[in-house]
Image (cartoon, rainbow, N blue to C red; front, top):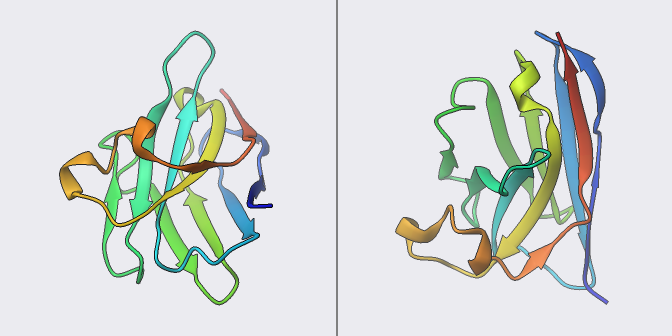
Length: 126
């Protein structure tokens, strides 16, 4: 059974940092693009970051560029999201996702990701 399991969420003050992890099991995701999305209450799920299969190329939403860093360890089948300088507007449930090789223009499209984790809550207090 294929599973993506996020961890590392929690409550942090504005300006603080958190590191999210997403461990995959059931198959290798080394040939898959890995991504992070988030969903705040009353809002649609939005793209946060993605990383290419080899980890060379990364993509970020404008709202997190310069503050968040995505990375991956294919030997551990795990993707990470380092979040620095957190703001209250970063509060959301964060989901990791995976999909096969993509056209770069669709990297932010949630509906095109095949595998999803259950989500981890991140709350940033002001």
